[in-house]
Image 1 (cartoon, protein in one colour):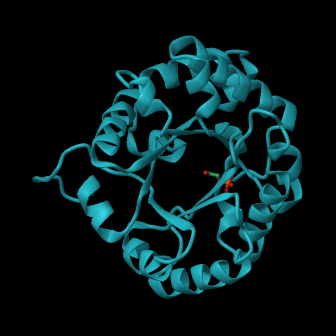
Image 2 (cartoon, rainbow, N blue to C red):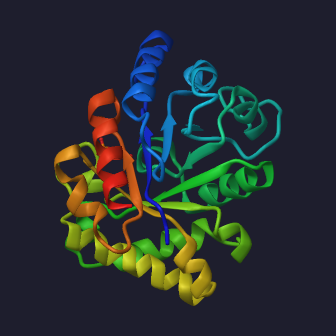
Image 3 (cartoon, helix red, strand yellow):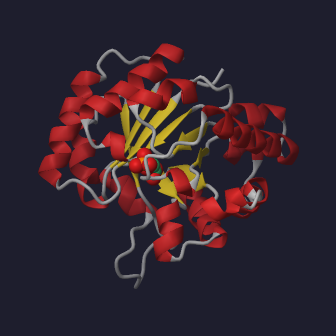
Length: 254
Ligand code: PGA
């Protein structure tokens, strides 16, 4: 059985002192959590201080992006080694905001993914359709193109260590959540695709998170769906109470 995994994507929020305040509170509020995976993804500037505070805690730390080269003249980019040395063990790849504003494509997602896996970083790969694509009834086609592009050349053994986050773009930061049934339908589609490309064991092992306006108030109905194995949380992860609230809901379902 898959235990739920809740990740918080802080995006471009929190100075280092604000970051410390948040994770200290989070540590206290999640003290009793036993089965639910917990990940925080602060901005790169705070990875090191957050990792220090969380070093003896079950809360893991992730970066929000990485570059595929090991080092070199790539101003502004971060290598996997730099991220690991700062204390993070996870990395978000292909978030829709990276795709929308920073030119990320399925091909660059794939390059970053291979580099993350080679380096030992655990990837969270994001996919999701835009509103016009959902309204045009091409959601499954879009998701299939994204996952097959992102996962090109990934072996079955590697696949088991990848988290997929399904985040409909129209639900991110908008307050509009996919209904539990809408989300479950896409999650089941992704799992079926994994079964066809790999095998049953692999498809059953992969964690598929839902993301898009997840809050304590809607988390339970989403996380109760059979193929929704956790959440990638944006806005609601910026306060310890709401993020811990979602984690506790996941723990009760686990
Ligand atoms: P949101 O963001 O929860 O604020 O909608 C989710 C995400 O972008 O990962």
